[in-house]
Image 1 (cartoon, helix red, strand yellow):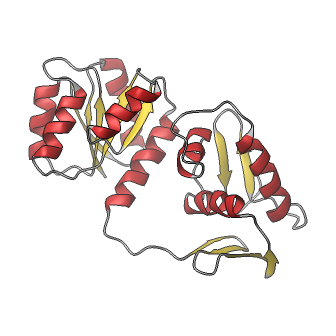
Image 2 (cartoon, rainbow, N blue to C red):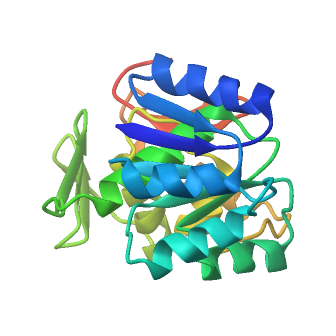
Image 3 (tube, rainbow, N blue to C red):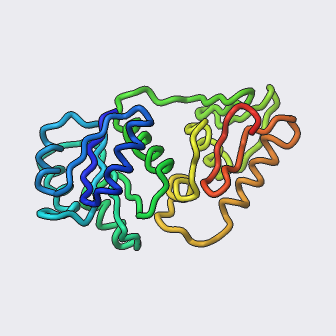
Length: 226
């Protein structure tokens, strides 16, 4: 995947470039909005990472102009501005996702990979499998070791999202936005409660845990013990 990073903070930009390259992605850097817009127009990028506060032309203006010209490359906005109104402005300007600073590199990588997959013309998966756990999206059935597991609708969505990102760390923010449709943290334990219920249903009686808590980061579903 080729990524263009438009970020004027050199420390953050080089941190991103290093992290992207170590994850197997190509990354170009540019430190102002005007040059960033030109590179975005001329480069064949899979994802753009755009800071909101940029010299010469601010990030929202870059995105608005880019979209007005008909470009569809996915855009992840980076910003220290994290209020709901700021996020709404960013998404309305044409951003596809919004991540506030400071951020975890693992979450940024997960988000841009999700954006790239979303924009790729690929066939939608109808079944997810992790070890002996199987989720069928069409029939809304879940089984483990051939035994049916009954889930509530929200539990099903939670498991579906986790299995779609099997082997990856899924943060609380990602779950709030994609399972609960919250673009802010309501400061409740709703995620912890649902994860606990889900774990008791898919892991408790089967001997080997598939759903793991990644301390300080989020959750991961994978085949194998921690």
